[in-house]
Amino acid sequence: MSRNTQGVPVNPAVTVTSHALWQIRVVRELPRYLLAAVAIAGLAASARFAIAPPRGPQVVAAQHEPPPRDPGAEGFATLFARRYLSWNASNPESSGGALEPFGGPGIEAGGGITPPAVGEEHVEWAEIVQERNEGGGQHVFTVAVQTDTAGLLYLTVNVARAASGELQLVSYPALVGAPSAGPARSPARLVEVADKGLATVIERGLRNYLGDVPGDLAADLASGARVSPPTQALSLESIERLDWSSDRSSVLAVVRAQDRRGVRYTLAYELEVIRAQGRWEIAAVEMDPGA
Image (cartoon, rainbow, N blue to C red; front, side, top):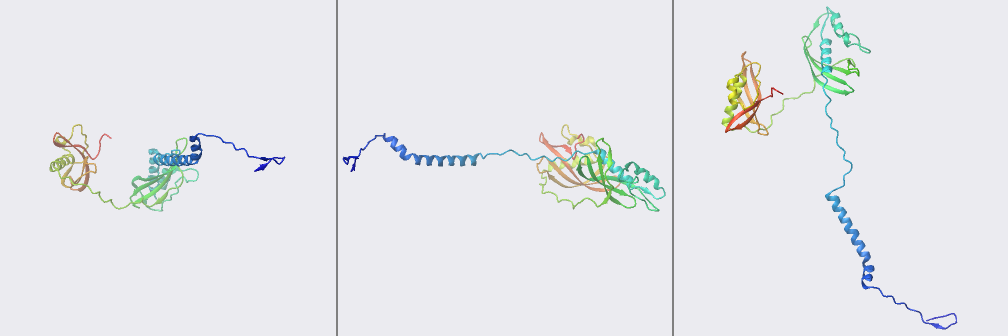
C-alpha cells in the first residue's frame, strides 16, 4: 500500500479497458501472419524465376559471312603469277617488261625475279586455290601454277584494291607449299535401292543421258525436267551402286563408263526421282543446267 505526502494511505487506481476479441487475436497472431506472408512471397518468386526466368539484354551473335569475291583481284593475282613464272634467258627484257606494270614503291619493276643465264620457263596453266582476306580490300591469294620446267608451283600474291579502285601488289610474292589436303572421305552409310523398277529406269536413263540420246531419254524424264548431257558422249558399261540419298528424294549412282577413245571412268551421279501415276521418273541428273 502506498501513502500520499501527508502519510495517508492511498489505494492504487486500476483502469480496466475493454477490447474486441478479434482485435486481441489479430495483435497476438500478427507476427505469425507476417512470417507466413513473407514465406509465401518467397515461394511465389522462386516459382516465377523457375517458370519464366528474367532475361537480360539479348545479345545476337554476329553473322560472320565470308567477304564477297573480287574477280578483278583474282584475275590480277593470276596474271601476275603467270608473268612472274614465265621467262626466257635469251630475252630477259620480255619477262621484265611483262612485269613492269606490277612494279611500284618497294617492289622492283621486274618483280624481283632474275632468270638464269640459259634456259626458259613457260606457264601451262594457273589457278587460284586459296584466299585469305586481310580486310580493307586486301587479299592474299595462293595461285597454283603449272610450269613446263619446274612442275607445279604454288605462289602467294598479296593484292589490294585502293580507294580509287586500282589493284596493286602489296609485297613481293612467296613460293609456298600446297594447301592442306587429305585422303578421300569415306562414303556415308546409305540405303541401297531395292526397287527393281526404279533401278531399271535409272540404268536406262543414265545410258541415254551419257550417250546423248535425248529422244530416248525423254521417255524417262518427268514433266518439265531439264538435263544437260556431257559434251562428249560416253557409253555406260555398268552400274556399280545405287543408293538412296538421306532424304529419299534422289538416287546416288556410281557407274563405269567409257568414251570413244577407250578411256574408262568411274563416275558418280545424283538423280532426283519422283513417282508419278505409278511409275518412276527422273526429274534431274546431277546438275541444274539453268542455275
